[in-house]
Image (cartoon, rainbow, N blue to C red):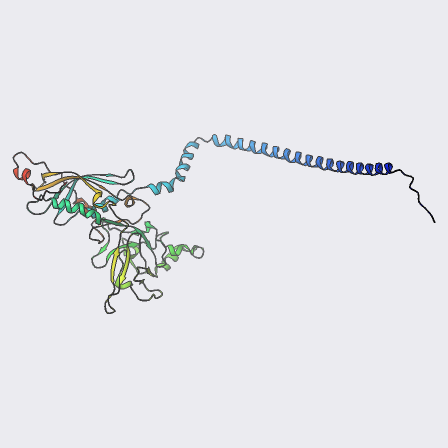
Length: 401
């Protein structure tokens, strides 16, 4: 039997294992070092490329900056650009002073008891606009000086309302405000004595047909023909040389109300929903109908609680002073000065189609410049020396201030 004898001492075996481990570690170090050198080289190339790119971009920016600064009109251009960026903000803050005439038409009484303004100052600064004015009140009959006229005027403030919103076509799409004609040549709102307020839609004008704009890809070859074709689905009439569509701002209850909606037919539900007819969508007034009996048409009501012209009501008018005087016709009148604080929304540019409403709840349409002019007059004169009737007439003077 053959036998093997291990002539290598144990210590020699351990040394051999250690040498093998050393060689393996040395090999790993070489590999790691090579990889590290490679990474370092790649990183150096990347950084060098980045530095070169940054340097190139910097030179480009410097050159462009020099060219830009060389333009003589640069400051004007930057000013215009800044202003264009603020157009939206400017529009939101824009006030429409001309609405003063409409507001006055609703506030100033024109019946037997009249109030005539001699001076008016409108202040649109601050959180709420104000009317500051001097006026004279005339009861229209003896003794003419009647503080009840002023008292009634003050109490009417709590019933003042306003309305605004948007005109829409049959499909409910908003018609741009510039496409609507709401007043005649005399400045008065269009009003039918039996049917209420209306406006004219210039349907064939450029950009005035919202339902047509969504079909621009198929109609861009002939926009005029497309507008004409679309206008045929509406009843048009001529106004000042233009084909227009009459849109009622006042709901036509008897014509629009139906128990069930029918395609293509004007419809108004008992909850006030209106469709299939161009109409005015109010942001203030809600309409509702009540069935009293099957043999009678619904009874309709209008509600406007949120849009108060004078938010503080009777407290929104402050009578500064009052005294007796004589008007231009030498009649006795009650002179007074007052300040009325209005809702800022009535002057906001973005609240389109604004309309002030009289205390009776009906739409006030006496807003032509001719009619407004009658609200102003010469300031009443102080009571002259020896005019005892003027000085001593204190009929119904309680509560005048």
